[in-house]
Length: 354
Ligand code: ASP
Image: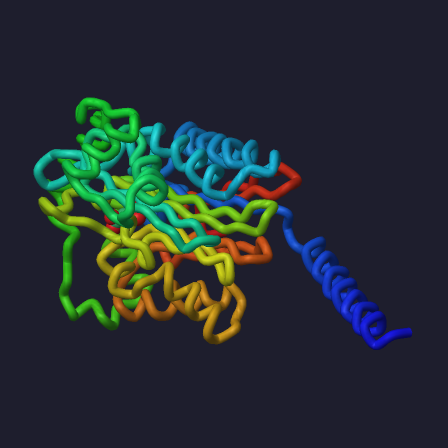
């Protein structure tokens, strides 16, 4: 046997061993996973009617099913994330798209972002008021523009050029949200509190501050998925926070705070008091902790949500999927509208701290 032949056989053996172990590892993993959220906050069973709870559960299942329909046919995680978010944006139950909360000036101004974990490409829009589905505009910014973030009138102009559906701003008006804003203004005033005194707050104190039904403050929606090709995507869409000041933009359209995805580690979508999520760079930090410390997704999520964020005084949660299809739905509030689905097609939906 010539030296060349020996080398060839050796190389073939190495390739085969590698390939086999790769396949074995892949078969242990979930083929695909989709997780969603519809906001975190003081969601208590005693404040919920049976009809309202059913409506939330049904809408979360519908969003999961939209994403599942794509992933189960071998579709991409980006498509699944967008489809799941559109279902929630179109529902007045959530603070995103139709049903967005009111600003201090009585308007609905929306933010959204999306990220592709394979390419690390990302897109976002902020302060848009006539784009029916802000998540699709964020995706168009990612795929059809040289930019990552577009805001206000420019973002709307771009969405029109991309033939996305534009609606009159009155489309976003929801009577229930309007009443919530009126009640909110009367009872509490603005939630924009940057006081340093909050630094030592406990979870209980933070929850007490937000002692109102969640949909008066939060209710952002988000989705994270890994597809059969191992590509992770994450997206988030919101109306922001009730009574937010003119010009205020939260964490949801900020890549690294509200949304992040990296095939090497995980995808994350955040919900909660955005000012704290921006300062804690929540979504990226979970990925970075996994990458640099080599810990599991759940450990990284716990560190950021139950330690770092709490110390700053921030409340809220995240949904996240790692590169093996494991997921973490982690929050430091009383509840978070959330759900998951995998290749068996059985949706799991939860609301309260179980
Ligand atoms: N994070 C959003 C914001 O601060 C609010 C939310 O999650 O409901 O704009």
